[in-house]
Image 1 (cartoon, rainbow, N blue to C red):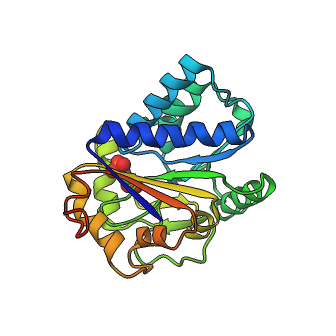
Image 2: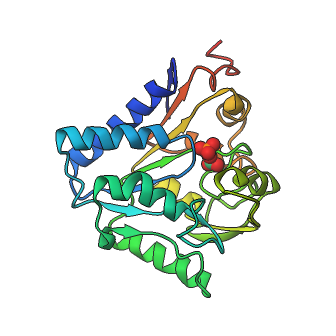
Length: 244
Ligand code: PGA
């Protein structure tokens, strides 16, 4: 794991956008898995600007969904589907055939998980995964206590995730379950980027980077990954022993 600390959110977002562009330049048919949430928002804006200006070509790339709120339709602005359409797929002009997201309305969620795992296998694995970190140390919807041996699965959402998740929605919603790629996908991905910014992430960043690697804190697995990079701003780094 490589840790890079930036003065501000803009700096880390620029760095993450450059990593994504580097990946597509190395491999035009790269398979990406890009998280939703507030943390990577600026990365996607910068990526879109760069693609518009320089004409980097994403037309051969594939995009895998990291997770989704079970029972929330893609038309809901709080869904991961809606977020990715708005912030990534439409601005980059990605065709539907190259987008592989969970159907969180499916009556057969285990089958959704199985077909996602098959898609990832068929595409030769994920080249680059960009994740945020939950206030409870989750990655995707791999909540504290999750087995690191799982591929895609449906999971009961931690109370903190149910509460914090309300920020993405216009009005209160019931968020009980998530469908997510597993830590096994995370560990098998060729390059994982984790981004976090702001004072509110300082405590969980400290725990994730300094406590023992454990399924009780899924983000600690970033340190087990053979090729991972953590980009944080100085506020998120403010509680780290070495950064002081
Ligand atoms: P955030 O979410 O980027 O909106 O803080 C991160 C996460 O829950 O993984």
